[in-house]
Image (cartoon, rainbow, N blue to C red):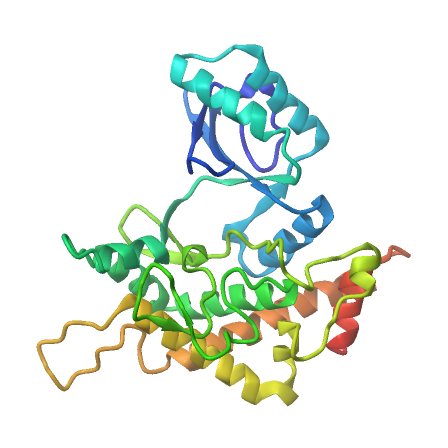
Length: 332
């Protein structure tokens, strides 16, 4: 069966679908117990396995729904065996298998994750601003997911994991100098959202959703390393590493950052249409900034508590130097 808990084998797979043409992201389908179909998603990250693994682990601490697992060498071989074996059900799958075989030879680290019905902020904003057929349906779903109980708090926890990881591929720290601009959307100035396509909501069957921390590894993050000389030489100053926002001495910086996140989200989601011209047009509520801050604090505490417990039960095992340095910089 295909799952995050069991190793992938060639005989588990009967079909592969390319999810993002031009990008190494694939859906694997296979027969589960009985006649149930199991599905998982594969994605190539352009980083070494340890850095990618720890980035995923940090996010998993704060958001179980974003669980990603680095493939083992044996799983990689099983995929190559399937992709090169010709045991595919149809011509379309054969073509995708050839693409997968080529992609498996690229450098980087392959991850597996659960299949989710995702809505991205990028797609939602594009539909909202479509000059020919403007559609706010996805904007409303994302706004509701954030405004619902626990939604902005969960986004804050996801931000906390990104800050600890040194990932700027969702929200940038420090905030973008002078106000950045989303290239696709002239006129929308951004201070914090670095990649609109990396703000996700995972939807369920009834149209509601929840923020989810996928795409949690930034291959260009200056503080992404966990081992080796690169980890030993990382610049962990307040101006470079966002983890410093967890410290009380940086309350002003943390509040400014949270404010930038909220203002960017409101600009991207666009104003609500209100029958009452005096009613608030914001989509995320009056306590939106405080809720993001609460989420960042909650996420930081979860990360702290996991490493605190790990050190108390280490039995002589050492954490990677990059993680140790970050913990030391926070006084954890």
